[in-house]
Length: 330
Image (cartoon, rainbow, N blue to C red; front, side, top):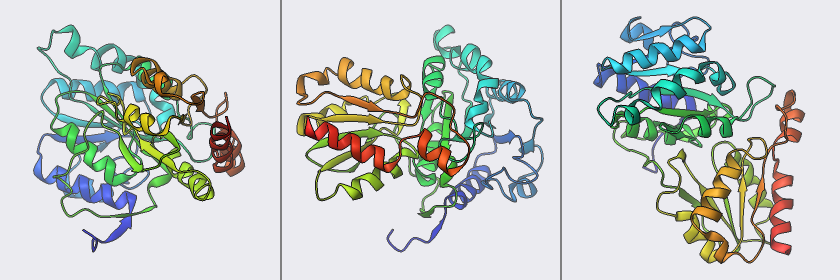
């Protein structure tokens, strides 16, 4: 509703998890700093005191065993939310996710499932080890899991709701720089859902289709503001990378605009290339192009340190505006 209170993004999640744990006795949450301090971004603040140490608890600094605990609990009928503190460190828990969680339903011919939700946060911030976005590694090693990339915390809550109704494993990557951005607090926190594999058109336009997800969308919106008198941009949030655009929403947009650019903050050849392949080849979107399709990605290195490092290592608003102008000029 229009009169909904405006709160910080982390408060949306805090209120959401409070209601979830109150209504679903099978949920448990754990990871580094999740229990006593309520996680580093405060989405579980005060909830251990309310629900007890057996449901919301801390673990050692060992991503491999956190994923193992999550898989074991999921196999035993619980609904675990296992936290990887930062997306970069998913690497250390990847083996059991790829080998066990992602494959169980497939290799048991649908008899067994592993409804584990891996909660993490990443994308833009400042620093080599806390700002990476290794999405190519993730989507290519975790086929069999949902890969959710919400742009804000309300959208993340809707994804948690969708996943709680599912029996499949999933990874939700929250925006690390979004916890203190203001959002409207929904009155139906436990009811609304975000569909898997259905992109959302954030702004309609006629000249060019821009495809992205997560934190990068806010940078694109800055560039679009600069271009508002020059170019009519259609901005699409894919919402989930696995599954990806199952109804070919992006193709429908491209039929209107005839130009497309895929933008993200993974290294070259990563998730932007994956999206390019899905749309241009699989959806045969090349038939509708009036200009060469392109990708705009981060540089081929870990993000350099500090605000300047983030600015130069990943696409900034000026880079994005320049790339859109280039496509339009072709």
